[in-house]
Amino acid sequence: MASETLKAFDANIQPQSSQWRDGKFRNRRPMHKNGLWKILQILWRFTFDKPAGTVPAKPIPVQAISSAQLLAAPDRSLFRLGHSTMLLKLRGEFWLTDPVFSERASPFQWIGPKRFHQPPISIAELPPIKGVILSHDHYDHLDHDAILQLAGKVEHFLTPLGVGDTLIKWGVPAEKVQQLDWWQSTRVDGLQMVATPARHFSGRGLTDGNQTLWASWVILDDDLRLFFSGDGGYFEGFKEIGNRYGPFDLTMIETGAYDHDWPDVHMQPEQTLQAHLDLGGKHLLPVHNGTFDLALHAWQDPFERIVWLAEQHGVPISTPQMGELLSLATPQAGRRWWREQSV
Image (cartoon, rainbow, N blue to C red):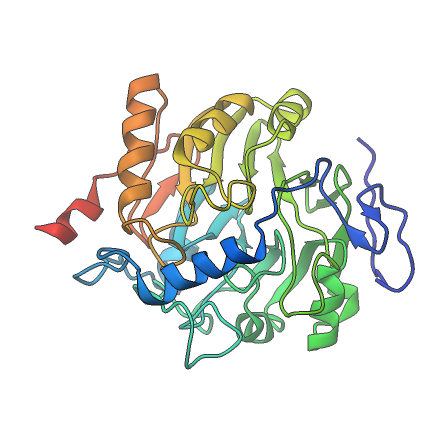
């Protein structure tokens, strides 16, 4: 596919995107909508009837990382920093996905979902970053303070349409930002990055719903093929992505913050596994879990369910601790570290 990039996007001008219709970005099929009464019920459950166990009773184990360790790490390494934040080392350079380092996934740092653990490394200690890959603008994926701290040490910010303009408004130099529509791609120092479809939504306030696009990402490094899901419900697009760019050596797929009351927003673990199979994935790395309390299930439920499902279907699965090095060439399974929290 030819390389295509968009440097700037103005939501007041209809972009040349088939996802933009009637003043908003939209999914291929309309999403399930909860009525006002259902929304009030969900809010009541979150506020007054949240079950026990959504937050770990003991501190999450974290393997601290130093800058020296990162520089000495072999090429094609991955470090999980928390939630959907992965640090990839490819061709001797570092890439971050959805970097969130703040204490809370919230517009305010005094209220909202609080981290279960500190990041394995601070932004100040990170080596220079070749690029940041963003999936969408929700607070647990787009961290204002982290972006401002990273701006000086990152060469490239790759975003879906509209998200890059948010970064530019925050002070990120426009020349560092590339904005892509679904199926558009760009190359950076030999790596190919493709913004691929997802089934989700966007918005950081009450009035900006779906004014920016959401995406999953394909990362190609010669014979190494990686997939990063961002957020979203299960949909037919996974098969299309797999047909175009698979099979994938490693899929990093959202597995957490799910509920039957929001089926189009996040996938149940069974759907995560199906998405992995649709993509032609070899190894599965379940992400979007273990860092924030964003749902009504027990915090370790995503790990238990997806590991059991993977074992039943013979799918190799990797569950590294936060901060643990994962080889992209030969991903290790990792131990069941979350079970130690209930001992």
